[in-house]
Length: 204
Image 1 (cartoon, rainbow, N blue to C red):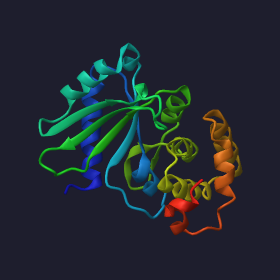
Image 2: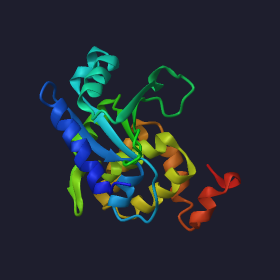
Image 3: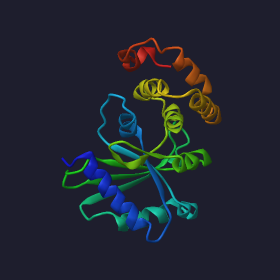
Image 4: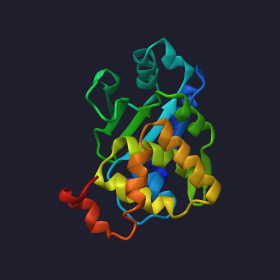
């Protein structure tokens, strides 16, 4: 299995190829982004948030460009989550898998909202990561929308790193995505252990 560093180098190459014809913004999100901020956890796949003005003409056009930019050994699946009205995480996602199983699965979440695009512009480089990472307030906002037990645990671990200014930014984003009450309930549970967040009877 290729290292995470190799995977990020591969994605950088894909992005560079895409940028020959369109402008694209991209950053790490999900489990690897959480790890990048020093939280101890594992992840199987690698998640990215991506946006281009090109998707305004239809996500399928962007996907076709994406297909042309990836190496031959990769298989691409596109899911239109934005049309699933009952999905709590309604995003169009490009799933990339390696037919030779050298690389971890990669998920490219296509940004839908203005605040997500702002988050991409606010992404930062972190030590030991040669790839932009979404800042913590925006990661928390995305995880509040996803709402799984791992997301709840990650939110509290990340929240502990925030400055007062960043906490205010996080609460404003939580209000924007209509998850501020969920965030407040989570913060009330900070004394609980990691295991409590994986007990289905104790979830918010």
